[in-house]
Length: 461
Image (cartoon, rainbow, N blue to C red; front, side, top):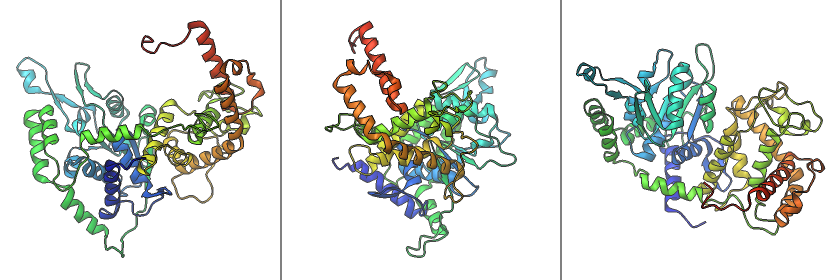
């Protein structure tokens, strides 16, 4: 892959955040060829990909701090502006605190207008302790994340556009709510903030010095105060224009144009490769497809449904579906591919490999997967239980895949060589759910071809 100046810029920012701000100095490595702190790198990718990121941990571990640092270093918007307008989760919050309220002065003059909250107009949406918010407030955030627009009373809408979102949550305890399932499902990935090392006696970057560096480099009271003044006096549109033209002078931010180019570079990372075994022989994509098929295919029920009991069919017990109560959604599959491509891009590679998928997959499923009662984490673990369970599931999936990879590739080669012949294969002659899925797919495609003819892409829609 040709060396990217933008990639170098991003990597330097990740290293700088880790060292200068003492953020995640002790962590897993992202990739054996690119020794970057994993959780911090995944947060950076969430910013660059405009994705939704859930950060869990105990109070005081730097969950919201990390989100603000990432947003300031990468985007150039002052840390203290994010801190000033950040939504703080507690049970007393109402929708008006998140979205906005009617302008009562305009009502006195006979017309309706809105006073929108600045939180929704910032380049990054940061919600602190989102699990403490009432369900109706979480619903408003869900709408904003999903539709990119914020609505008040059905009459007023503000379109905020595509942007990343960071939501933090403490571990569930007395007095906290849970994130509502639809909002949890929209979180593309989860990471955990944990013990980060009190001081670094080698470089002398102590926690206190990191705090001083953050105040010196990422805070700008002049910009922050002026931005809030503009918001209060001139409204949200002028506020957006102001922060776009007034960025921190102490950082070299990723511009909107650079961010768009980075997204194109990440998107260009290949999912497949040409080999003698066929065009789709990349183990990364086949492993992810096998993971998807094992979880979502059931010999007993035809499909994996959360409303069905776990299958007791002897065939199903060999695969992942017997360990989980929920399925693997298309949204999660897309997120896995996007982040895996991001990992490959950070590592300077032109295509994803199976390690990239195995690295990000536990973080994509950990907060969404419900497990069978007998599926437990190992006695010793380094991660919170949800991520530990997800890593265990992915490890089993890798073991299953390695046993059948050759057979799957052989079948795929046969399908590519003669799809008409492959359409006559009997699904019952094949064991692995991905093999069954491939045969079902080719049968469906051949049927559509016979019924409707060849697809004319220009006229299809």
